[in-house]
Image (cartoon, rainbow, N blue to C red):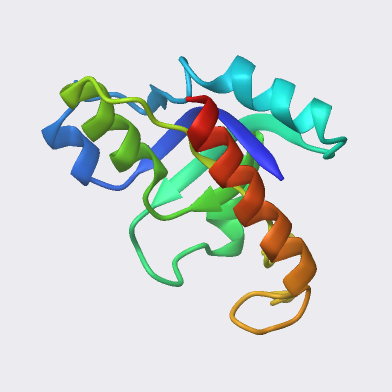
Length: 136
């Protein structure tokens, strides 16, 4: 699992809700609660920066290399936009990721993305998300 502190923005929705910048702070109000929950449940996690892009299948090897050099540990498609909208509206938000696939290899590793494998893990993640929502 990854918990996010910053997002490197490569999508445009958030520019309608936040000042133009390359990065946006996320999970500022919920990070401490969430990491304490993960520690309490003995869940391994990494805290870091995420690259958000809204372009399908555009995680090219060169872009992945640049984003890793910028400190990104994973990629998603909507986190920075969600953060910008919630900040703009004054709403609480917690975003975290379960690494269902891997782009950090010679070939894409689909792992358990879009299939019914590792359902026990996926159910546990859903339970963690619900508990985090209750604590927020």
